[in-house]
Length: 193
Image (cartoon, rainbow, N blue to C red; front, top):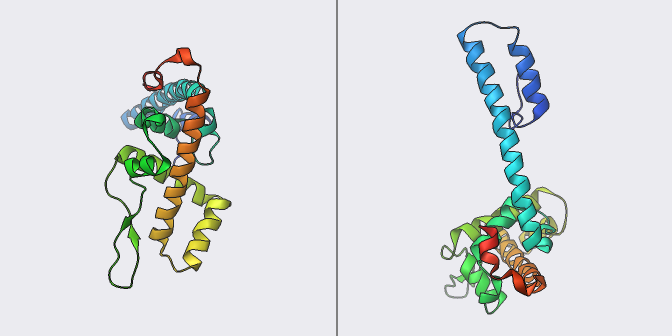
């Protein structure tokens, strides 16, 4: 039996492997069975923790979770790393902080931009994950990248532009969510920790 990639986090796959191992005897089968049981236990705990993270993020940033490609763990990282979005004076300042603001590398008559290697790398990774997830699905992100590539951008340049657009949308949603928080909640940074 060959198990497809990333299927050991599925309960039905673990049950099937466990059932097959019960028919085998020996040290290898015993160790494999123990590993399957431990994997199931860890999967249950991971799901519990993800549920807790999601409940906390829903309270802090419900509109951010509605952004296509932004799951609970990614949203939690963004909320924590942004550390109160109102501290940024604009979406451009937020983009500079998360490394999605373009850096000019123009030379002569060529005007080009490259990826910004600075800023908060954790926020940048979150923007990248959202972008990559959106590109895997049909929708506006895929259309936008195709349009940019048709206009002469490389895939890297088109992805950089998409990440900047996502950064602007994340900023808008976080600002909306932060303003909607009740005043007695205090600093949103502590709740996401």
